[in-house]
Amino acid sequence: MTIMPAHSHLEDAAADTGAAVDIGPLSGLIGYALRRAQLAVLGDLGRCFAEQDIRPTQFAALVVLARNPGLRAGQVALALGMRRANFVPLLDGLEARGLAERGRAKDDRRASALFLTEAGAAMLARLEPLLAGHEAKFAARLGPDGRCQLMGLLHRIGDAAFDPG
Image (cartoon, rainbow, N blue to C red; front, side, top):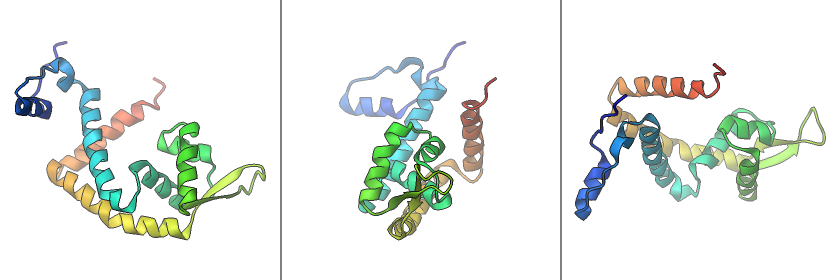
């Protein structure tokens, strides 16, 4: 299989410095293109949320807690695609800011259940218009049908991670 190189913004950046950077087949690889797109989208989202001092992963955790009160840390981590060991410090930070709290799980008194606080709900309300602007910016770049197409393709790729075949 031959991978055809595509023009990239890396080439534009290299031209600005006077040095050409040959990225070879990278620009034709799905994983490379996904990673570059992820960096662009998450970077912009981070800038949008900076005034509220919220990172995109913290936002995702708040959304999951808002929609699923009483989950355990492992369940939230799984839903976010994180290791539990990485989620716990994130939760600790949200808890320290009063945005989330631990409580007793109904079915197991030894386990902690996680909840969004009123301050966490207020934070989500402040983030909603910022998120809407962020999404609109990228949807506009994709065109009227592009967003739906992209979401469908991304879900097909993501679903492959959970398909044993």
